[in-house]
Image (cartoon, rainbow, N blue to C red; front, side, top):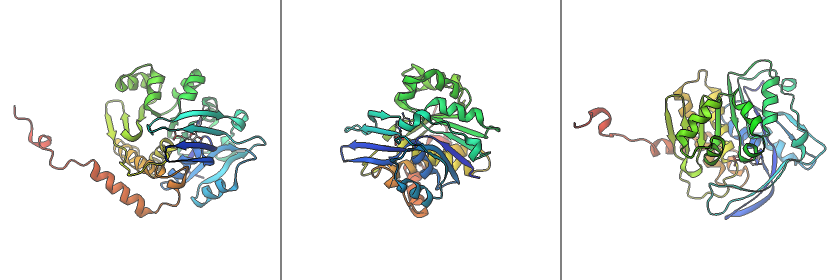
Length: 313
Ligand code: AMP
């Protein structure tokens, strides 16, 4: 039985960035998050695909040890997202969202997995997220949720119902403002905490992430890559790395969360280095270890004077 279950979209994406274009490319929130998490824990995916979905998607998940028994096959077409990035790679412009087989997707999680340590409700219809939470016989010890502007605009009430029952929300900067109605991210975090999640993780694209806990704020940069080709999936691979790592640890703590944030950021940096999921595929321990070492030196401040000397006055 996988320790981490991810429920989300398994998609065929059409993406254009200033560096190229792909059509019907493997993607989806659960797909990216599952591949990324597979480097850290045993993971199972719940989702749905249609008749047009290529076997290549299943082959890739299998090669990464991801359990895909929870992916249903529908007689309709696969969920498809068409998006574009201009030179501001931090902002995805949705051109088209074809829900297709997602419209009739009604996952029966307990039928496939009767328990898990961690549940990641990746970006998908909040009605589906809620149903999954509601049908679990035992609440997992960690429940994390992600969402986006599409659902905030179309299903706010349903989304708030989900937020009242989760531990951690990951969301991007613009969406945190949209959800809270606050411009200041500190105010937004306070407002969103009132909706339920104990921890809010705000994704800020190339500027990294901000983590708001009950009494603390933590920041992590994004890795300054020489070449970013396609930012699609950055948020999902970030979440997959973070949650995969947290699941692999026996006890949760602020330290584990912080380590997970850096691991998630490293996984996202692999993702954006190529189109679709190519940058996330077949990574070695050495490659990931080297990226983590670079991260460590990026944010270490040895000998910072006032830390142990006290101020002059
Ligand atoms: P991100 O990590 O935010 O870049 O997520 C990218 C993935 O989200 C793409 O592979 C899309 O297929 C998927 N996606 C786009 N729109 C939606 C949506 N409304 N609900 C769920 N997944 C979506």
